[in-house]
Length: 193
Image 1 (cartoon, rainbow, N blue to C red):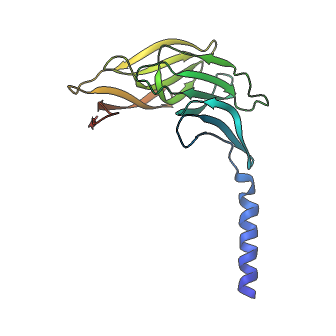
Image 2: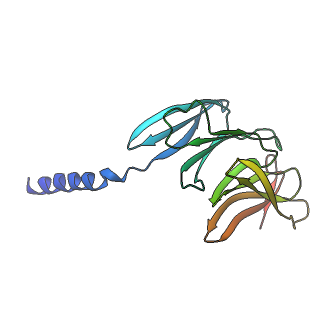
Image 3: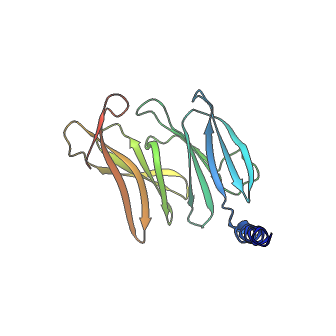
């Protein structure tokens, strides 16, 4: 009985300590046919799974802080068609009404967004698909959410295309991860990069 009481007390203490450790989480889900997706969030343990509906079968969500340190969510309907434009929505992460985004965009680049990072007034997007053989990062101006600049990463492996996988900002430096792929959607392969 004494060990049982210590165990119960330990569990209660653990629950009390971790109670405040709930993290706010945004997530996407898709149906079992991969044709329809939704955006949801978990705040303080409360789940809201239908904030944005009617997404396609390959949605993604990324978070970033804008130039005013306001938390934003970038939701993208990644296109199943290679090199087609993604539809992107920017939301206030703490919004009560998810019916209207802060911005809706169909930028010419990036395509198939795999990562985002923000610094000052700029948002950098890692784009997996490009129309050329180069990988790219795209810079978006957060003052107007317009596409401003493209940074290219050249392909050096013959027969392969470069793909942007991720982007992170450390201090004043932007780091991006690229891969080289040859027909990655079919029988293709990846090269050391």
